[in-house]
Image (cartoon, rainbow, N blue to C red; front, side, top):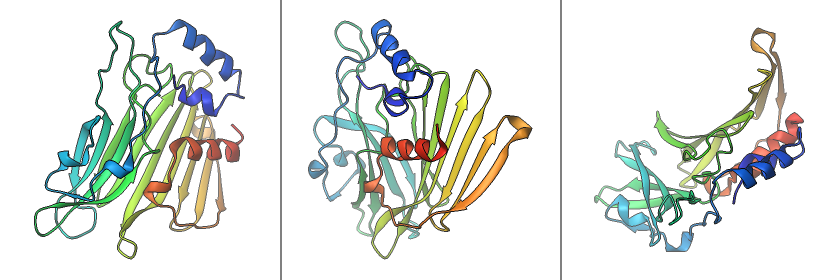
Length: 243
């Protein structure tokens, strides 16, 4: 079973103990989410459905121009092709993956990127989402690929990743990462916004109109869609923020 927030933040306010109790008293998944075999995803296909290998299916398909050629490209959110509940009615934990397919002038689709560690699994939302499947929102906004996710319990964490197509490498590079951590009991909110194009990071802490903002610089580094692990990125942000 995956308890996403507890696994990352098990040192804060006894979160590890809380999640162990939750594991014993709630009906969450019994089996770990699977991970997609990237080698089984075709490099080119005639339609979007062909990018889902055996054992996987398209959970959501988002269309939009991602490389500026005025053709409709696709961001494909894949999910393990297995029932959302087992024979005993217990929630099934299913893995997710993201495939980017660019349209070509001959009508076919070409694989441009695969993220196998970015999207949280269907039951990784923590106690806040209970038995409801965890969100992993994929949108295309003005040519930018945007990934939004949320998980937690009393402390709710929201993350947003932004990627843009790089014509030099023909890959998708990370241009922005935002994290917000909100304590729903105390109404304390900590946010971090990192711009990977400028190398600037803005942190906000406080409650409502008493927020304190700080700005800092960090070393710019090209990070690609395939490089991003949501769990690792969040853990690094928590460490920077002292959460």
